[in-house]
Amino acid sequence: WMGIPIECTFTTNEAVPSVVAEYPGYLNVNILDLETNELSPVAVNEANTITITKYGDGTCDFLLPNFTLSAMEMTLGDILVEGATVTTDEAGVETYAGFVKDMPLLGGELIADVTLNGTITAEGVVDMKIDVLWMGIPIECTFTTNEKSGVENIEINENGSVVYYNLQGVKVANPENGVFIRVQGGKASKVAM
Image 1 (tube, one colour):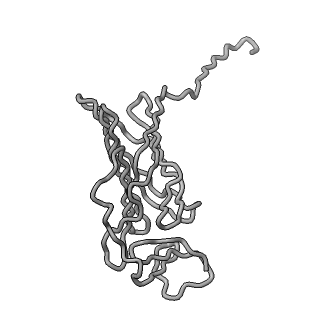
Image 2 (cartoon, helix red, strand yellow; image 1 turned 180 degrees about the vertical axis):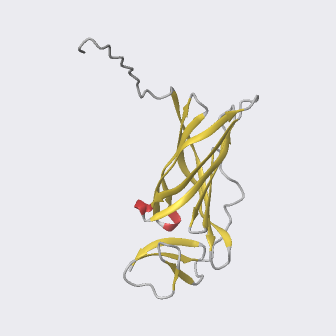
Image 3 (cartoon, rainbow, N blue to C red; image 1 turned 135 degrees about the vertical axis):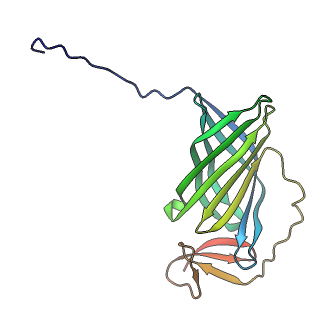
């Protein structure tokens, strides 16, 4: 331009090559019973599938789509941990680790921290732990390719006293005019009043 050389550099936003793999398996979920202060099962060996997108730079995206607690009749939404680290040892075992702060769940009504830790063996056996922490209330999830044994005979007291919490995790004595979390006998559900 007007005899002055102009130097231009073009870059692309091409992603690092990736490998996408789906793993069918079983989801087990325990949630804190606020009255007994013990973890109670709300999902046992529920069929589910995770998707892992591995990038060539030692990172991956972990997806547990449509995370649903069927015993509570509540769909929290996708658990997506982007940029998790993945390392492979000499035996071919892949180790995964990731964390998301302030993940919106339940259509943005709940904000939780999510921690991912787990392994996939060279034979494709998956063992993942997904910890969800909402307002100090832990929801412990495991995803495995093998059914969890020894949990078929667990009984939950369906007749425990009812406790209500608002969506900020504060106990409410007399809930009215709003959306609340109802906890009874180790099970929780979202209710509108």
